[in-house]
Figure 1: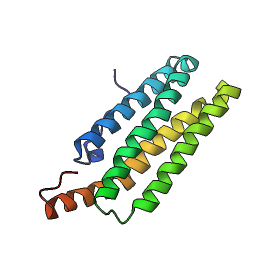
Figure 2: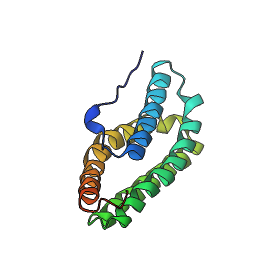
Figure 3: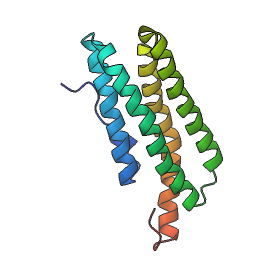
Length: 141
């Protein structure tokens, strides 16, 4: 049984970004299942490793698209990404010291990311990219 279901309203219409967001949702579901089954400690290290890699790859894709399309919100969006990168690093450091202390924080961070960042910042970026594509039909974003 799935604990989380992708909300079509989260779709940006940018295939790669949507795919990456769905992968993230899958990882959140793994964590929620682990919490439900009281098996979090086994999953957190791999989830934190995934997140460290994910924030670099996913944010790089978004930031490259922003730069290539003269996105006015690039600096602000990049600052949010940098903050999220730092949060992932902090969670990993704190987990190394006390694994129990960060379980709920990781879930809160992921849910906040899913709900606020994807549904807010990323949707604004997607609108910009779609407008850019419409105005520059030869340039693919």
